[in-house]
Length: 254
Image (cartoon, rainbow, N blue to C red; front, side, top):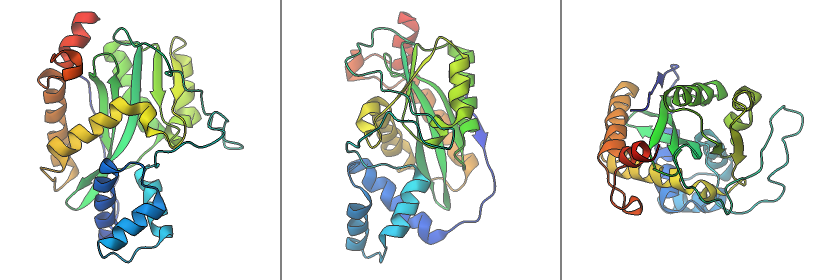
């Protein structure tokens, strides 16, 4: 089973923002093409007097990006040391385990706050090779999750991420480059569909566990996610895998 970790830095709760973030998260799972203007109108329709500035800030805090093409997606960020890498998966046939891993972060609501979940999925088998839970999003946290997955399962040929600052930061990119045999691939900005398998996984875990069983605190949430990961990898059958389980496909083809 993949190793996991739990990071917690105490933070003051903001109950109104937490309420809005839970609503945004659920709606985004249904309509990932909703940008800030549409989400503002959706929330106003529910009776919340929100403005675009607040929702834009919450989108950034939740690391959300509406699906939609944007120009100049392969250019490096200027002046901050961050680098964006080209997208390598277009037209690629994924034929074996550890050929391509995809890594992403999602917001996870709790009864009294929220945390962030990072996960790494093997695209061939849909096996979750690593994950970690934290209440802050940092490049070091992502690096440590990837480092643990490599130690347990070996190196992928390609690692695909989005263009979030945690993944374009030198702390993360330099670690990947030091592995030498791993090529880093990044989705076009605003194109969550490029990382569709892990987006589907987020939908699965939220609708099958997180939304059904809200957690009161991070420790409780960690336990529930750990149990779900074990279920997903070893028991949940996938139609696209011929109704086999991810771990079964990952192990038999490795």
